[in-house]
Length: 384
Image (cartoon, rainbow, N blue to C red):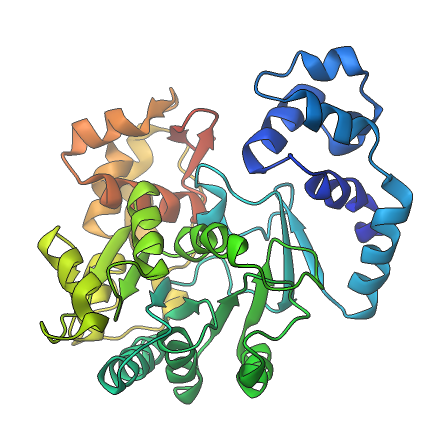
């Protein structure tokens, strides 16, 4: 059985109306696999808290073979990679949010798990100033080895992708439509350029058309894949502010570029700064928070800075392993509080006196380096 054949039940359950990321996880916890969900009885499905009668009916009467076969054929034909929670290559940062998408469609190549990822977003209706700042900031970040994530929308998003590409860097576009759909249409050249240097991804079926209702959910993936989110320009009702809010909920850093106080394009970013977002006027403002190892004076190769190291056998071995793993001071502080008994993320924050964003990013990086492991309920312990 091919890898794609094994994933057909994931794809099918993901397409059932009413089954979102949270209910998908409940079903997977109860029945262990999507295949078992489709084989479940009505009474057993009714035992799952939060599942409506309508959703249960949708599962029981889902036209499994017909609805999925066309999708599988298109995935195979277009060489689209399908990632599920079960895959080791599923983005580690995204896996740690409250509602990670059960299925991701990927066209191109995802950045390696140990790459530093930063999202740069902003309004579609942007100024020349905003687009110029987005391009130059992303060029500078890309030169330092950072992967740029954005949404390929008009305005700031497109400028962010262009800046990364101009520097020969890696960039990822998270779409509010299927990965086979170029939207907006005028970004066709940008879409194909992104595929050369990175990837386009979506949680939607590969030929799904753009729908404004999909974009807020898309924004959680943009912020969820990133250590930090930079808002370059945004009005007070901009979707970029939704992305920033989601980043905060996910325990990630939020940055904003100051703008003209008389410009509607900067009302949102200036408001974020008043609320405590970190001010950004150069790449090092972002790197100092998201990746202290990438400093202005000494730029080491990213692979060396983020190299994996063997997991410690006990608390006593932490000192040695932190040296070999090239940990930041925050990561070392977090690691010293962990032992073999799982500790809740909130307790780690209390013990270290670090911000929730700093604790969250440190835990994610330590997990990617195989030094710690996460169990259910945001509990963390040393890797065995």
